[in-house]
Amino acid sequence: MKTDNIKTHVENTVVPIWFLLLGSASVTLYFNTKILDPFNTPKTIIAILMAGWALGYLAKSYRNKNPFQKSLGGFVFLFALMFIIFMLLNLIYSDVFVVSFIGETQRRNGFLAYFALVVIFLFSAQFMTSTHTIKLIKTSIAVCALMSIYGVIQILGKDFVAWENPYNAMLSTLGNPNFASAMLAIFSLLGFFSFFIGKLSIPYKILIFLNLGLSFFAIIKSQSRQGLIVILVGAIFYITLFVFLNHKKLRWLIVPLAFILMTQVILGMLNKGFLSSMLYKESISIRGYYWRAGFKMFQEMPFLGVGLDRYGAFFKQFRETEYSRRYGFEITSTNAHNTIIQFLATGGFLLGITYLLLLFAILVMGIKLMVITSGDDRAIAGSVLTAWIGFQSQSFISIDNIGISIWGWLLAGAIVCQYNDKNSTLRRNTLVDKKLKTLRNGHLSTLQPMVSFVVTMPLIVISALMIQADSKTYEVRAIVGAGIQEIDKTRILQISNEIFNNPLADPFYKYQAALTLVDYGYLQQGLNQIRKLSKEDERNLYYLEWLAQYEQKTGNIAGEINLREKISFFDPWNDNNTLRLSKLYSESGNRIKADLVLSQLTREQ
Image (cartoon, rainbow, N blue to C red; front, side, top):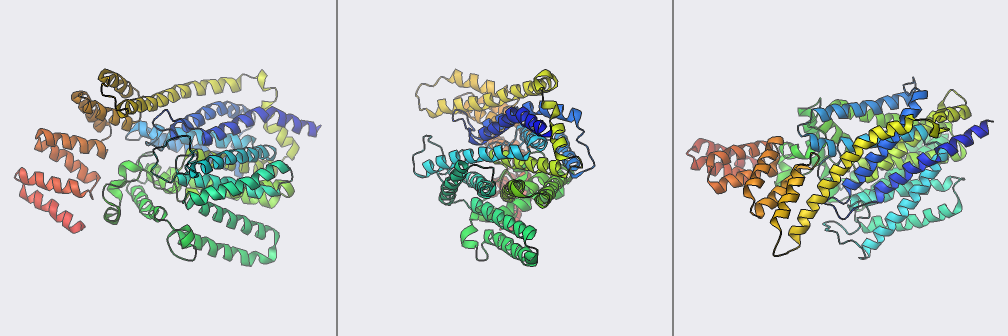
């Protein structure tokens, strides 16, 4: 009878699980070349629609099973819920709502993305049993194959898309060689350690072997160190844990050895130690400046931070002088390149500490799961935990990219689900049957489709507005870039107004549309829009600099001084602005301020 219960459970969860896995695969693989941001916007839209659908199943499951339990699994649910609540609190108090809601330009790491990731994590934590984790592994094998093949095609110069690419050719489906190499490395860890799973068929193991070769080739050719770091960290972790669990006499040796190796990995990234030739790259060592700027933001605004995904708006104010001297005062960053620091800087203590607690709880559950399992269950747990550790290692030095992050949160949910199943005081078969009892005969219940419909409908509207903003901005750029002598200016004005009137259009898209209007003779309309944008985001240096140059052209010295004083506060190491401000003070007869500004510039040198 209990065997029948398990079989029924599996049958009734196949459709939602495959929907989740295929949706996650789509997030990683899909891109749209007909919009301005071909990677981040469409991936985010797929993720939030998946989350809306998944919420119905979660509501149905939580109706019959209280997630607030006095257990580690209960704490994980609580931390995830607190994480979303604190993100919502930060969103409410953000200085620029749209940016915090949809995310920074070319990033999309706002509230929407993390809401989707947490929902997907909770769904996985409820339903991703070891049986379904096999499906997750098989899906990752297929996605890895497609990604690595496309990466090799790009390396060979045969890409079917003519990307405007400032990076190495190996972008794969994520738009950046760092992201692509890290994702391939995570899949490689998951695949390699899945060799030990007896339930995984021979054809899949052969495909894993082929994937490893293609992925490693693509990672090396990408010239990105992140993939190598992920593989090294994952391998060190797995070997250490395996020896610790299976060879008690070697525990005293393996732990200090692992510590030494991890120290060498970190030193290698900093161009020190014997791994430096393999791991060092300027783009990795520069992270220190981003991290310290993030910590400064956190120290200045410890409670709520600077606002979700608003790191870039504050970076130039908090960056070190040495950064400007070394890389130039115009170079900026929109992310701390460390997920924990990013949350502390943009969300404050409550968000950052909640995220840390969530990570710690998952790690503890993963290690305990390895202790209490054996055979195939341990092999599954080991491969998933190692891949999750690999994901966390890239999060330590990189920006969250939803095409990668969705797998990190899926893997975390799988760890939680399997731990809860194994560690429950109830008998396993009873728990498995009970956990998804509400999914059995699910077509008779109205709760899941009702909740999914209610949540998904507004998400569809949000998605439509986001995609419209991207496509319209792309259309304007395409018209202007076509080089047509007789351009329909009224069409440009019409499209620009559609962008301006879109409540979820990226403010930077509106700025680009305004600049286009100015270039094609609609000066007043463009000027009004930029002034409006500057009122909505008073620290945006693009707006301020353009308006200052406009006041310069019109001879409004007082207006230009006012704007350049703001720039000086938000970007204190901007030498051009400092020199111009000193000149303006001198022209207005204020020699004292002119000399004071110049003396500050001299001290900076």
